[in-house]
Image 1: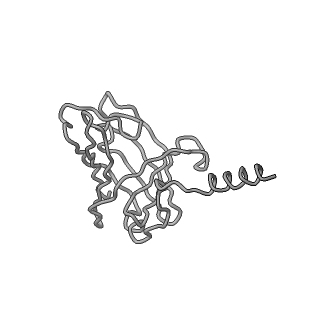
Image 2: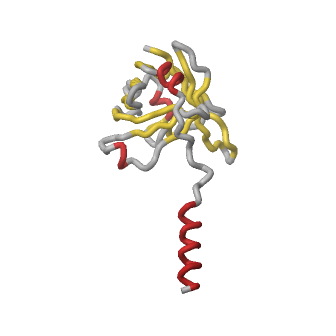
Length: 158
Protein backbone atom coordinates (compact mmCIF):
# COMPACT_ATOMS: atom_id res chain seq x y z
CA UNK A 1 0.00 0.00 0.00
CA UNK A 2 2.80 2.41 0.94
CA UNK A 3 4.60 1.63 -2.33
CA UNK A 4 1.44 2.39 -4.34
CA UNK A 5 0.96 5.69 -2.50
CA UNK A 6 4.52 6.75 -3.29
CA UNK A 7 4.06 5.85 -6.97
CA UNK A 8 0.79 7.79 -7.13
CA UNK A 9 2.38 10.86 -5.51
CA UNK A 10 5.36 10.63 -7.89
CA UNK A 11 3.01 10.41 -10.89
CA UNK A 12 1.02 13.43 -9.69
CA UNK A 13 4.20 15.49 -9.28
CA UNK A 14 5.56 14.32 -12.63
CA UNK A 15 2.41 15.13 -14.61
CA UNK A 16 1.58 18.37 -12.83
CA UNK A 17 4.90 20.09 -13.63
CA UNK A 18 4.72 22.60 -16.45
CA UNK A 19 7.54 23.38 -18.80
CA UNK A 20 9.01 26.86 -18.48
CA UNK A 21 9.37 27.06 -22.27
CA UNK A 22 5.62 27.22 -22.84
CA UNK A 23 4.62 30.24 -24.89
CA UNK A 24 2.49 32.84 -23.16
CA UNK A 25 -1.00 32.57 -24.65
CA UNK A 26 -2.39 35.84 -23.25
CA UNK A 27 -3.15 37.87 -26.34
CA UNK A 28 -2.10 41.39 -27.23
CA UNK A 29 -5.34 42.30 -29.01
CA UNK A 30 -4.23 45.87 -29.77
CA UNK A 31 -1.23 44.66 -31.80
CA UNK A 32 -3.31 41.94 -33.44
CA UNK A 33 -5.81 44.54 -34.69
CA UNK A 34 -2.91 46.63 -36.06
CA UNK A 35 -1.78 43.61 -38.12
CA UNK A 36 -5.22 42.94 -39.57
CA UNK A 37 -5.15 43.07 -43.35
CA UNK A 38 -2.95 42.20 -46.32
CA UNK A 39 0.83 42.43 -46.21
CA UNK A 40 3.87 41.72 -48.38
CA UNK A 41 7.39 40.83 -47.27
CA UNK A 42 9.58 43.50 -48.85
CA UNK A 43 12.97 42.53 -47.44
CA UNK A 44 14.77 39.86 -45.46
CA UNK A 45 17.98 40.70 -43.62
CA UNK A 46 20.48 38.58 -41.69
CA UNK A 47 24.28 38.50 -41.28
CA UNK A 48 25.86 36.92 -44.34
CA UNK A 49 22.71 37.20 -46.47
CA UNK A 50 24.86 38.00 -49.52
CA UNK A 51 26.42 34.53 -49.53
CA UNK A 52 24.40 32.32 -47.16
CA UNK A 53 21.08 30.61 -47.79
CA UNK A 54 18.47 30.23 -45.07
CA UNK A 55 15.53 27.84 -45.37
CA UNK A 56 12.69 29.97 -43.95
CA UNK A 57 9.83 28.21 -42.15
CA UNK A 58 11.17 24.86 -43.42
CA UNK A 59 9.63 25.72 -46.79
CA UNK A 60 11.97 27.53 -49.13
CA UNK A 61 15.05 29.75 -49.41
CA UNK A 62 14.49 33.03 -47.57
CA UNK A 63 14.87 35.03 -50.81
CA UNK A 64 11.78 33.26 -52.14
CA UNK A 65 9.74 34.97 -49.40
CA UNK A 66 10.44 38.44 -50.77
CA UNK A 67 7.19 39.48 -52.43
CA UNK A 68 5.17 36.84 -50.59
CA UNK A 69 1.63 37.79 -49.62
CA UNK A 70 0.26 37.41 -46.09
CA UNK A 71 -3.29 37.97 -44.88
CA UNK A 72 -4.08 38.32 -41.16
CA UNK A 73 -7.61 38.21 -39.74
CA UNK A 74 -7.49 39.45 -36.15
CA UNK A 75 -10.91 38.42 -34.87
CA UNK A 76 -10.28 34.68 -35.40
CA UNK A 77 -6.46 34.59 -35.67
CA UNK A 78 -6.51 32.95 -39.08
CA UNK A 79 -5.08 34.01 -42.39
CA UNK A 80 -3.15 32.86 -45.41
CA UNK A 81 0.34 33.11 -46.82
CA UNK A 82 1.52 32.55 -50.37
CA UNK A 83 4.89 32.50 -52.07
CA UNK A 84 4.79 33.88 -55.55
CA UNK A 85 8.36 35.01 -56.27
CA UNK A 86 8.94 34.81 -60.03
CA UNK A 87 12.52 33.65 -59.40
CA UNK A 88 12.85 30.38 -61.34
CA UNK A 89 14.50 28.68 -58.34
CA UNK A 90 11.46 29.30 -56.14
CA UNK A 91 8.39 27.10 -55.98
CA UNK A 92 4.90 28.50 -55.55
CA UNK A 93 3.29 27.72 -52.21
CA UNK A 94 0.09 28.74 -50.49
CA UNK A 95 -1.33 27.74 -47.12
CA UNK A 96 -3.82 28.80 -44.50
CA UNK A 97 -2.21 29.92 -41.24
CA UNK A 98 -3.18 30.49 -37.65
CA UNK A 99 -1.43 33.17 -35.65
CA UNK A 100 -1.56 35.35 -32.57
CA UNK A 101 0.47 37.99 -30.78
CA UNK A 102 1.06 37.34 -27.10
CA UNK A 103 1.68 39.79 -24.26
CA UNK A 104 5.43 39.00 -24.45
CA UNK A 105 5.56 40.58 -27.93
CA UNK A 106 5.89 37.25 -29.71
CA UNK A 107 4.16 36.43 -32.98
CA UNK A 108 3.14 32.75 -32.84
CA UNK A 109 2.56 31.17 -36.25
CA UNK A 110 1.31 27.80 -37.51
CA UNK A 111 1.41 26.96 -41.21
CA UNK A 112 -1.58 24.66 -41.68
CA UNK A 113 -0.84 23.30 -45.20
CA UNK A 114 -3.76 20.91 -45.85
CA UNK A 115 -4.25 19.94 -42.19
CA UNK A 116 -6.63 20.99 -39.48
CA UNK A 117 -5.04 23.54 -37.15
CA UNK A 118 -5.56 21.30 -34.12
CA UNK A 119 -3.56 18.55 -35.85
CA UNK A 120 -0.52 20.76 -36.51
CA UNK A 121 1.85 20.31 -33.58
CA UNK A 122 4.66 22.59 -34.68
CA UNK A 123 4.93 26.26 -35.39
CA UNK A 124 7.15 29.29 -35.14
CA UNK A 125 7.70 31.91 -32.48
CA UNK A 126 9.03 35.19 -33.85
CA UNK A 127 9.61 38.53 -32.16
CA UNK A 128 7.24 41.26 -33.35
CA UNK A 129 9.01 44.61 -33.69
CA UNK A 130 8.63 48.11 -35.20
CA UNK A 131 4.84 47.87 -35.60
CA UNK A 132 3.27 50.84 -37.40
CA UNK A 133 0.12 51.29 -39.48
CA UNK A 134 2.07 50.48 -42.66
CA UNK A 135 4.89 48.13 -41.65
CA UNK A 136 6.27 45.71 -39.09
CA UNK A 137 9.15 43.29 -38.61
CA UNK A 138 9.18 39.65 -37.57
CA UNK A 139 12.50 38.51 -36.14
CA UNK A 140 13.54 34.87 -35.99
CA UNK A 141 16.73 33.28 -34.63
CA UNK A 142 19.04 31.36 -36.98
CA UNK A 143 22.34 29.56 -36.55
CA UNK A 144 25.12 31.14 -38.62
CA UNK A 145 28.46 29.33 -38.31
CA UNK A 146 27.60 28.18 -34.78
CA UNK A 147 26.38 31.59 -33.61
CA UNK A 148 22.74 32.58 -33.08
CA UNK A 149 21.83 35.59 -35.23
CA UNK A 150 18.62 37.41 -36.08
CA UNK A 151 16.83 37.13 -39.41
CA UNK A 152 14.39 40.00 -39.96
CA UNK A 153 11.35 39.77 -42.22
CA UNK A 154 10.05 43.26 -43.07
CA UNK A 155 6.36 43.50 -43.95
CA UNK A 156 4.63 46.39 -45.76
CA UNK A 157 0.87 46.88 -45.91
CA UNK A 158 -0.63 46.31 -49.36
